[in-house]
Amino acid sequence: MAEGSADRYSAGEQGLGYIFQPRFALLRLLELPESTSVLLEKDDDLDFADSDGGKTLGSLKHKAAGDRMSDLSTDFWKSIRIWLARYNRDGRSQSRLRFFLFTTATVSEKSSLRRFLPDHSGDEESSLSELADIILAATESKLIRQIATEFQELSEAEKDDFLSRIVIFDGTPRITDVPDVIKNLHMRAIRREHRNFVFERLEGWWNDTVVKLLAGERIDPIFGYEISDKLSMFAEEYKSDNLPITFRGKEPVREIDAEKDQRLFVIQLREIGIGSNRIRNAILDYYRAFEQRSAWARENLLVSGEMEEYEDRLVDEWSRYRDVVFEELDESSAEEAVLAAGRALYQWADLQSGNISALRIRERVTEPYVIRGGFHILANSLPLPPVYWHPHFLDRIDKLLGTAK
Image 1 (cartoon, one colour):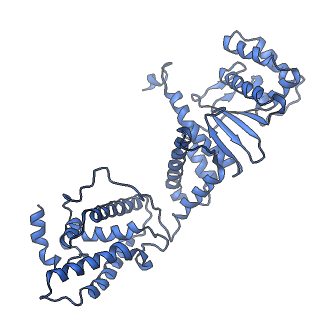
Image 2: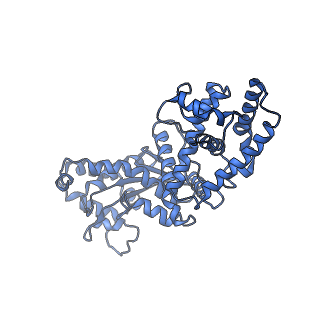
Image 3: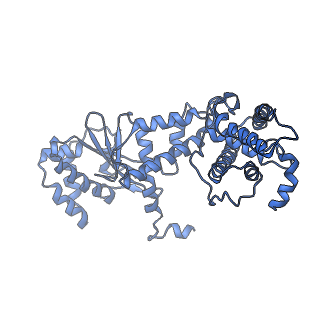
């Protein structure tokens, strides 16, 4: 593997560069005022626009560890070519453009490019345009000579104006370091044990938004306040009276087959004559609730015994409503009346239980599938489910399970 990483034909760093672009854009937008917006792959790698109409073009370079920039680094001069074209297009000195180069490399101590670093302070005798002329005169590179020709088309004043707009940010965090920078600097209001999960959700939303932007499904740029709103929303879900909801709208990988599914909670629904479409919805609720519980457990978000106490509340409320619905039934009740009672009990769990605040696992967890799926999980328990719908289900369970097998 070590030899492979040194292969001059390896695409590893190039691949990292593509992935680095959206991740760094997220970090940079978090650092800027919320009114700032960004577009990707328009005039440069990143186009930032502020509320006053100013625009910053950002070139990104994710280099191998230890890389250094010299006066004739092609990364710098290729960016110059892009920026020159935009500078000419927008009226040269009349334009409101700035040009930033973000690179993980560092500018060499002896390089004249240190004049472009944001913290550079010096009293050099030569102007930036004179410095550029000296560098360009020394090169044998055909590529850089072509750029020099384009640069010489500017007047001396325009050269200085153009170069004064350039800033090099060297030592930019590498792609693997960006998450920690975001979590440590921009998530301080979130408890430390939750930051990894909040970041994963934030970046998942961000990458999806970037894909839509690049695919043309979204036309408008992405604004900083959108990130703030999402980050705030995710953070709220990790408060003590809330839990994150991450399976809304999700479906299992396997196709749902309401007719052939032999799980106990599905058999129970068939016993009271529930139709296939409603059974399919029940399967979705079961899947989402089950997977959601697993996610909460993986993230250590549940207090010890909390889920058991929650299920006890579900069973208690179900049993109270069951007693009301089944109160008029006896051994001589017709099967039609028995089925009607079972359907009424299930309808309460399916359509009404979500409105009962006492059935929420936590006060602000209002997602219906958590409650509905919770009833189905209980109805799926063996050997005797604590929740059932048909009044005589417990008497029939052995026969029904034998038939299902």
